[in-house]
Amino acid sequence: MFNYREINRDQELVNQVAVLYQQVWNQEDNTVTERVMRHAGYDGYKGFVAISEHGDVAGYAYGYFSQPGQYYHGLLSKAFSPEGYQYWLADCFEFVELGVHPTFRNQRLAKQLVTRLLDGVEHKTAVLTTQHNNGPARSLYESLGWTVLNNAFDPNGDKDSYVIMGKKLQKEHI
Image (cartoon, rainbow, N blue to C red; front, side):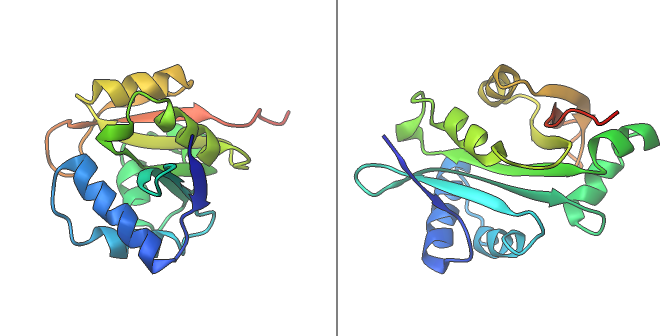
């Protein structure tokens, strides 16, 4: 059983998310706190942490309205044709981060976080990127109705290290 709190600009909570990020990705990254704080100021920002019954941050997820002028939106836009851009990115919720502490994996927490994050989002589509070889993440997203839009996304010059996945959120108006 988990309790959920919104990730906002609460410095202590954001610091805990940054620590979990580093544990999940097994890397030191001193930019996580600043990045989450910056993203929390973006239009349409929404984020949650899952708190265990013992008070530990077990997982987190967040995203925001993807718009021109944002760094990652610019990278994503290059991966689409003009028609693909219009369909997938013009009215898009960008699912930025998902992390679950290894102790809390295989408890459906990731699925709950993704579902909670997208609940009530009023954009036409959502997109995310994940590592090409991250089978568990890709399986999770596919089980939730996400599809691969680009199987060779290279945001960091790592030669096709990521995939872009998308999900239609609302029915198109006729």
